[in-house]
Image 1 (tube, rainbow, N blue to C red):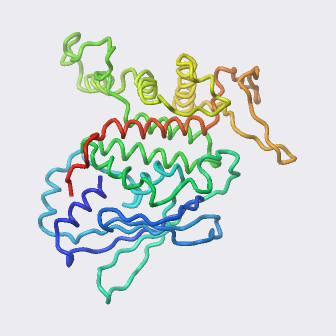
Image 2 (cartoon, one colour; image 1 turned 30 degrees about the horizontal axis):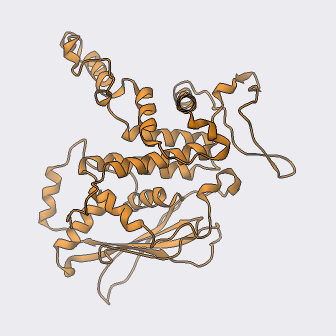
Image 3 (tube, rainbow, N blue to C red; image 1 turned 45 degrees about the horizontal axis):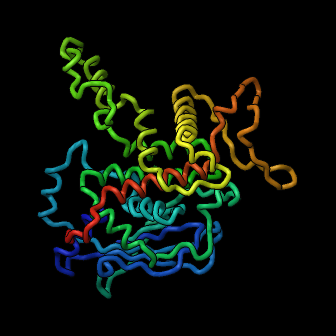
Length: 366
C-alpha cells in the first residue's frame, strides 16, 4: 500500500529529504485521543472539539513523505496493469482503512504539503464533497457511540496486521476497504448503493474459481476444449468467463460463509445463525444486486421508514410481500436492513485480514 511505501522511504532517507503531507478529514463520530505510528511518521488526532456547520468533527492526519529522487524511477519499471492503484487522492487509502477500523464515515476536507523547516508556508487544497445528513436511526452503528472509539486504542495493531499481510494482497484489500467506506457514505442517501458497494467489497477478495475446493471444472481450460479453434474475441470471452467470472455468486457466498463465524448477529436476525437461512439471505442480497445492475430492477428494501408523526415502523419477515405501482416483490426478495449486511461485510474483511497476517511478531519491514 502507498502508506507503507512512504514510511519505508522515510525511514531510509535523511530528514532533509522529508516533507509533511497533511489531510484534514471529517466524520460524524467524535474520536478522541492521539495516534502516533512508527515514531510519529504517521499521526492523527481530533482537530475540533465541536461539530461544524455540517454536523461533523474534524481531524488532522499527518504522514511524513520524501522528496523524489532518481532512485524512485526504478519503481516505474515495475508498473503494469496489475500494479497497485487506488482511485482518489492519497488520503483515500488512509480514510478507507480508518473507515473499516472505526466503522465510521470519513470525508476529505483539504490537504496540504510543507517542508519541515521554520520558513515554510502552508497552502491548502480544498476538497469539495457532498454530505447529506440522515437520521441515526437508519443505521445507528456507524454514528457516534460514546466511549467506543479512540485513536490511541488498537489502531497500531490494525496497521501492523496490514503490514504483515503479503504484498500481493494489498491492492485487493485496499480496494475492498474503499468500497466499504463508499457504502457507508451512501447510508441515508441511496440505500440501494449501500448494498451494491458492500457486495463489491466482498468481490474484491473472494476466491478465484480455481481456488474453490469443490470446483467441478479441471484446472486448465485446454483440458476439455480447444480455445485456439475460436476467433480471438470469442477466445478472450471464454477465457474471461473461465478464469474470472465463473461461479461468481457461489464464490461470493463461499467467502462470507468462510469468514462470518463469530459475527454477533442483531437480536432480530438471530435466526440467521442457521447456516441454511444465512445462505438464503446472502443469495437474496446478491440476486437483488445483480437484477439492479443488469435488469435495472429496483430493490425491495427493508429499512426504517418515517411516518407523518415522526415515528418509525419496520418491515418484518412475516410480511406477505409488497406491490408498488404494478411491480410486485415476494417476501423472499426483501433485503435485510442495511446495518446487518454492513456489519457482516466488515466482520468478514477484518477476519480476512487476521487470517492473512502472520501470527508472529511484526516483521521488520521498516
